[in-house]
Image 1: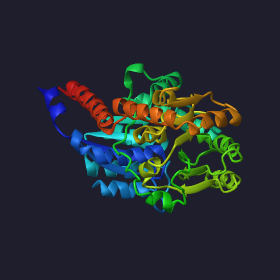
Image 2: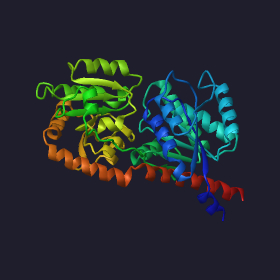
Image 3: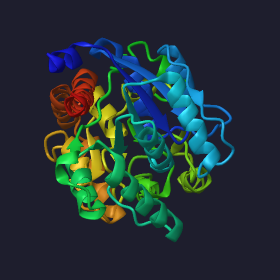
Image 4: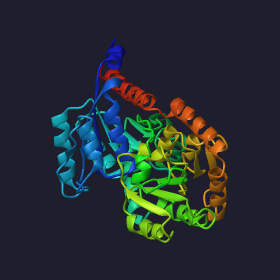
Length: 385
């Protein structure tokens, strides 16, 4: 009877994240807020520190969720931990779900101290940054190992990488692949093309990823620059923002007018609706939302076969994969093959949409999340019986 009650009731989930920037984890929370109610999940959202403006915050408000700052000046502090505890006592969730390292550590400790179930999502497959970043990762590994009821990995690759580094028992690490709920509006009258200065038949390559060094913009832009003389009408739309914005924009400026840097856009799906190919060439990536969005829009991709990317892209069917570290000339040749063959693009785009519906739709994703929450709560109620 207890299990049926858990399955049938609305589960109150408090999501905690470092900040409401423009990265994949932050956008994912906005997606969750948009689709959670129909799945029987009531979402509240807290964040550790403020940014001047946050499109993600506006998306949360549009979904009826007012994001709550913790109110601490420094993330790694006792004041932040106390602020999270106050927030959790006020919200009184059934379960706490954290994203990103500081929220994982402080949110996990706060949840444990209040005897609340805790789930953490891991969005990485590599933890090899600076000495400080490696130390932060080690602390997060230890806190999750000691306190988390579940660790969610966003891909099979991410789960394997996490188990190899964390020392946590495998039964506590589950795979819940991300999903999205939006579909691309069709640009039938060409207004978006006109806004972006594009001709109706001009071919378009989109780079859709946070502007961070590890996302591979340097290699992608170098590969695209090799196409400039071959196809001078080709346009590249660079979407996103991030900590390495200036470096990426300097490289884009060197492409002699080929690249339009659009920054963060809340109409990504509309832009993908006019794209011919999406390009993504990171050294590693757990499960990039930008490629899931491309699949939803029916756009074939060229991407590196690293991390969780092969779980999204079926090479030769929905796009082409190249080896990590592939030279720009090879990436350029692969892009050319797609750009010059409209029938191939259409066939691969249709296959990508079918794959999206089978694996990455928003309703499938949120149902799997609810299943994970329910399992944690059932275990907890069973122990308390």
